[in-house]
Image (tube, rainbow, N blue to C red):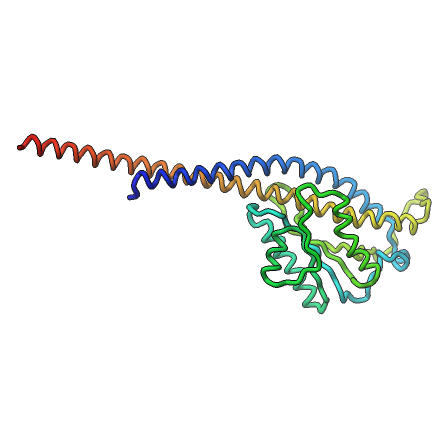
Length: 289
């Protein structure tokens, strides 16, 4: 059995670790509330904007609008992966990286020349360690993404799509459903899906200006918004995963401390019993002289 002093040192080490994990859990909880608010605020606008775009797009307009260009065959594609800058969030980044690899492997298996663009230190470190060439690597997007950052991230790729250097753009991010559910998701950003049939509109539904002019203005907003929503959802999912991971670590530390305290008490009791026995033995030896 380990000595009480050795067990005491282990208890101090676990207590120090518990303080760190408990603090990180509290910080993640605080950041999670703000991140959830950004997700809740972004969703209604994104849903309305997507509904407007879906209602306006027609096969006829798809032939006129460059952002709706539907290539006969996808030959060149870009995959944008969003990860975190920090770790200690469980399997959050591992799942995102796995999803991005699956998307890239699928495209390349289909004979598509695919390039990878990564946001976040964790994703960048993973692919650079494996000598994977990255189109772009950004670490300047933190816990509170802004629409301007989303615009700066996606605009260069959109310009290349308009110049027909790319035939498709995919974005891989974490969908925030709840604190316990943040599945990695792959979404095709461009080209925008075009309905096979023209949407039916009520007779009183009048467009002014024309649908083509409205789409010219709305589609860039739609693309920026999808990117922004992916950023805020991933940020919220990161904090949720970190909170869950740190809570689990804190709970494990509590269980370990309970076990160590029992071991410490048993070891201490054994030492006291041994000392008492030595004292009694010594006293009896002196009395027999």
